[in-house]
Picture 1 (tube, one colour):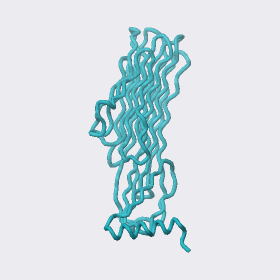
Picture 2 (tube, rainbow, N blue to C red; picture 1 turned 90 degrees about the vertical axis):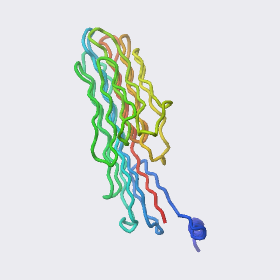
Picture 3 (tube, one colour; picture 1 turned 45 degrees about the vertical axis):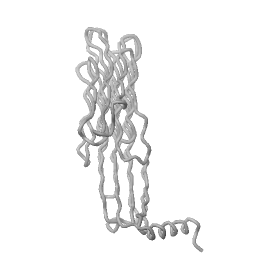
Picture 4 (cartoon, rainbow, N blue to C red; picture 1 turned 45 degrees about the horizontal axis):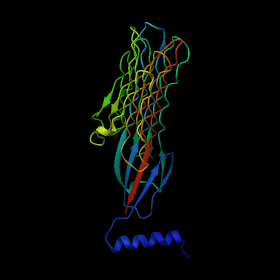
Length: 295
C-alpha cells in the first residue's frame, strides 16, 4: 500500500494535470548537501549565490600618525540557469559557500589590522558555479584596501569600499547584480581627527530603496550597521555591511556583517595606542543554492 506521502504527491499531480497547472518543487540549500531529482521533473532552474567576503580590521597606532580603517569586502557572485531535467543525474552534489570571516580587532600598540578572508564558492554539480566575495584588507598607516570583484559568476558581486584615514568609503547602488560590497572603516588622520565608517545603500539596483540605507558607525567608535538577513528562499543577493567608526578615546567600531545571502562585511575602524582597540571587520553573509524543479 502506498504511503500517505506518496498518496498526497499522486493527488497533487492529478490535480495539476486536471487543471493544467505546473507542478513545482523548490529546495533551498543553506548548507552543502545532495539534491535528488523528482521523477516527474522536466526542467530545473538553479540559482547559486557565493558567500560574501569578510571585512578587514582597522589599525591601532600612535597619535599624530595616519591610522586607516579596514577595507570592506566584496559580495558573492550570483548565477541562474535552467536545464532540461534529462541532463541532470538522479542526484547532484550541492556546495554552499560560507561567508568569509572578518579580521580580528587589534589590541597591540602600533599594529596594522588583519585581512578578512574570502567567501566560499557555491555550486550545483558540474553545471553551475559562482565565486565568493574577496576579503577587505587590513588598515595600515597608508592604506585600507577594499575587496575587489571576483569574476566567476553570471552576475558579479560588488566591490567593497576602501578604509581611510578619514571617512570610510561608502557604497551606493552599484551596477553589478551580485552581493553588495561592504563599506570601509573610518580612520584617524595624523592631525588626530577621527572619522565615521562608510554608509551603505547598495546591492542589486532596483531591489533596495532609500529606507534600506545602512549608516556607517560614528566617529566615537560606533559599530557599522548590518541589514536583517533575507529568508532562505529569497533569490536576491544581500546587502553589504557598513563600516565601523574610528575612536580617539576608546575602542573603535566593528564593521557590519554582510546580509545573507552573499553580502560583504564592512571594515573596522581605527584606534589610538593606550586608549582603545581597533574595530574588527564584519563577517560576510553565507551563500545559498536554490533548486526549482518543474513538471
